[in-house]
Length: 440
Ligand code: FUB
Image (cartoon, rainbow, N blue to C red; front, top):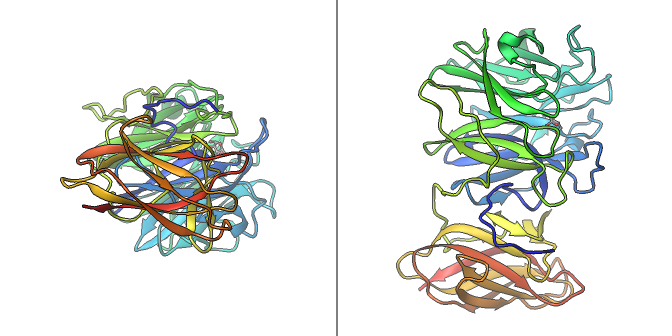
């Protein structure tokens, strides 16, 4: 693999292929739920089995929390994890997903519930919430796809969803049953959808204006409509993101966080990527004065962090701004960790505040079956100033985790950190769980 010095922040996750972003702001954190395109997906169909969760408080470093929901958690699912979205209500977290239903012809919408945004999520009903709602407009069996959920200021919750038809319905206060009729919008209604509605609706509200953002055409680009009411009438407003890179789908998610607005989407931007191995990206944007959304291009991503990272607390190795070569895994004992580490792979962590005194020691927890290896700790670039080199040494087995520490140079102020891994071949070097500096 050829390694590059990069300023890229897109795609935001490099350790997995991710798709269908559904960001949720809860308290001071962005929770990003995504589908996971398996790396061995064929080049002509989806292979998705789980929904993964990543969080950030600075918009540049993302922490991997594994897969709090899998399609195997729904006894009625065939096993395909199509898009979903999670929302909080009264301290519970409701995760609406779409998946092929074993019991009926076609895709259905299910809902899982958890007491924490990190899960574990459990199927709330033991059956689908919405199933095979084929109207005469739909004419196909995967119209119940891509749920987006929204709770209005008066507490009324709504579900929008659809492929080829855009549906909406009210949810009851229990969030796991539908209240009243389902309304269908024709995909060819130009006053709502311009050149047409394909799939992937995303509902949000800003300054009393409701936004319905969706994928249009195929290959897909992203368009939007607005309304003064969540139930319409909707007025077509234009393109959010035109078609650019190779993925034949795109999928929007929009939030405001710490005073900025962010547009989440996916493309095929990672090495080896294609229409079924996609990657989530983000653009920061500013609404126009009249509330319209500017047209966006796919870029290198967010350059300015909105918070610093504290190196003197325990930081998970799977908190990453950029990485090359590695991937992540979970186990019951220690949770999520970084694995598949080979010579020259690296992790970059951004906007780390070493304060006025600086560190004197660096500690990391690793495990290794074959050999262990070295972690070079550098700042600001892959060949930047060297703070120290940690020898992680052999721990006997992948399941034996040990702490190792080394003296480091007392750098002060805010820097990006690079952990660059070195060691011999032919085996993977070690697994990496967490790290921490001690302050002078
Ligand atoms: O990830 C599977 C499907 O691709 C989603 O349901 C669509 O929105 C498209 O992104």
